[in-house]
Length: 275
Image (tube, rainbow, N blue to C red; front, side):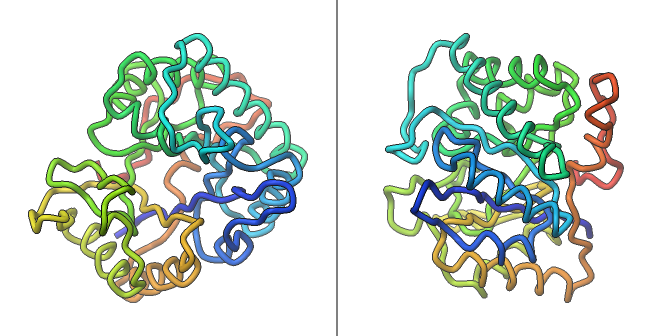
């Protein structure tokens, strides 16, 4: 069993801190770092990147709608050309700071409302894919199984990896339960660890209504803004490794070309990927 463990981080802003990124970076294998649109600022981004580099954690760009007030969790009906430029702007900002920190960006994982929208919205999904292709087609995309954005990215020649959520409840159709509903976020570390082990071993998860649904994932996300995020991530990793799982980044091998090389679309997925 091989699986990536990722977490959203770098989501502080100015004097306000959110999450214990330094502790999470001792546990996860991939870090989705906010790029300043839903959270994060240059100082926060730089510090998080430096810490990720020090721990050998693979870096991804956590791009979002331009929505600091709503933490990127509100849908914005933005024109495709504007969304494409916004995504490229965020990628450029994180890539530049990553270079200064001695690391690089390997993949893109959209955040919040943008992440959920491009599961089904072809126009916005295409804008995100076009932004990645134009900026750097060696970057991989991390999204949920069955998402429209994943299909479009695959057609465009990007590497696509799929993720599951350790601490979020699922609907019977495989979508995430809205955060507005009770039970949407799971907070017990032992329960979360049990769910993740089942996802990795049996490729399935129990939905909120009791339905068992198939779930094939290359990576599992523990949300960094959860109060118990560090405890949860440690519990998940400990449970996985106790059962013989190899926890390592899934997107690093696919994006292994250096920033100095001529970018070419990567069409082969790392051999251990679960799909």
